[in-house]
Image (cartoon, rainbow, N blue to C red; front, side, top):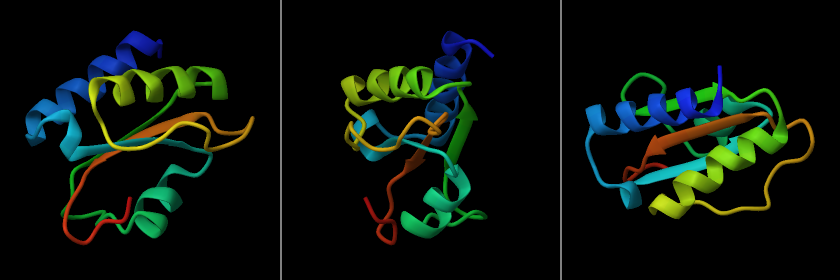
Length: 97
């Protein structure tokens, strides 16, 4: 899957689940499910969340940077060379940044 397809998937998902970019958190991870459901306390069944395998840490950082520049919450500098997934979730009262 190329990066433009991943970005398009995320944008369509965000549009379908509502909210402006600042209402979403975007990040990168080597274990996106653990990051979403454990670290960020996202509900797998009732919250809006998405992740995709970008194939490399560089590609994941590129997609993350795109969404941070659009206004999503989050920050750069996380992960390592095994971090090839990008994820996003709609922030909620029970989620952790």
